[in-house]
Image 1 (cartoon, rainbow, N blue to C red):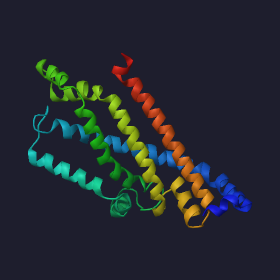
Image 2 (cartoon, one colour):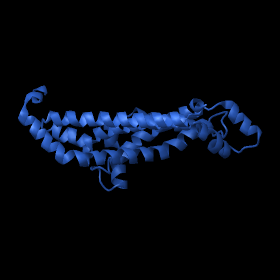
Image 3 (tube, helix red, strand yellow):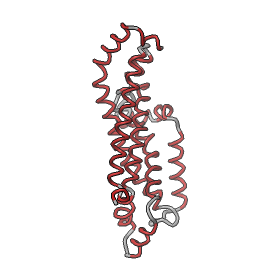
Image 4 (tube, rainbow, N blue to C red):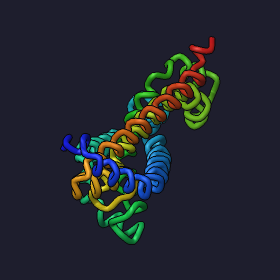
Length: 234
């Protein structure tokens, strides 16, 4: 594998492949990661709020059997390895997208894998809200919906941004694995050229780019979370 590092022809071949494939692969990776993260947040954020407010003693308690069922479903989805989950949701991908392979089709398993994770991250963020603020809002006659939207959610913004950053980097890693089922992006380059064709320099380049993406996402997420944190600003 490492013998290519000292082979000039291997470097030339890798460079030609990278020039042709990497620009579009980067665009596909950004497209998959951003869209999957957005959809996972849309599904996971309300679910996380439900897990906190619907429990016994919450601002809007729900039946215990419903909460237990919800927790079990979330735990089951989180426990399935992503490679297996991709195969399990083939029927759903075919139903929604019309195919099980390709860049867009991989978004379906990515969202299914990510939204329970986002729900748990959001649940953890919402639980960090000071209970005295919620009690004060209740004493002033605020409705459960008002407490959710005007107290719990605003107070959780910095932690939610940190959680979204973690979710995005996780989805980015999952998107690389989706190259196995024909998904686009850097994962496809690493697998099709690096693994299947033994062009390990191409695989190393794809990995380096993924690491750079993770660093960029983490940096932006940390800066945003710090900027939104009232305690740091005070």
